[in-house]
Figure 1 (cartoon, rainbow, N blue to C red):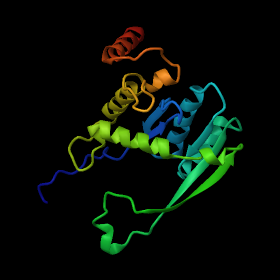
Figure 2 (cartoon, rainbow, N blue to C red):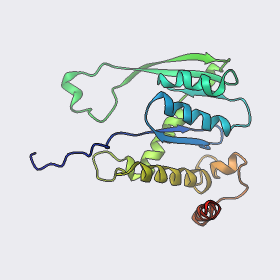
Figure 3 (tube, rainbow, N blue to C red):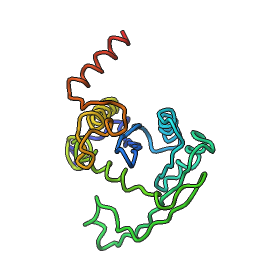
Figure 4 (cartoon, rainbow, N blue to C red):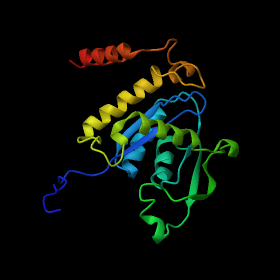
Length: 206
């Protein structure tokens, strides 16, 4: 339409990197940025600094992870990729499935560093977490005006979501918060605790 507004020059897409512990469901690290090697490395460096022990890590087939995991962890990790293969989109069905992925027709487990246990090479937990993130934040809803207009506001929203998810929300299977399951805290937090953390941070910053 001639009257339609054009997107500003600084408009674009943004990516949310998420790490999750399969046992406690704790999300120890997340990062919002470009879907490139630099941001993948920043994300993994942050994750590395939050871990106390050697872990097994599984990522999808995103190429940026190959060097980023090696640069962040060197040999101190058991790392594998789970590469999924999808059917070729058909022209006659492309319009109908515009916002849905094509069917997955197979997956390949690839050991990259160390000796990852094949039985635990999986991205199912983080994929379920991605669904939770999309369901809990309107900013991830497609075809609406709820998307973030500023990257900074988007980062703040994602941070609040994961603070709530880790410390306040009771996981149905665990029957406690992920932070309690991981031993990060001994009690269930509420919203007031998150507000207090922010206020304490602002006081320290001042």
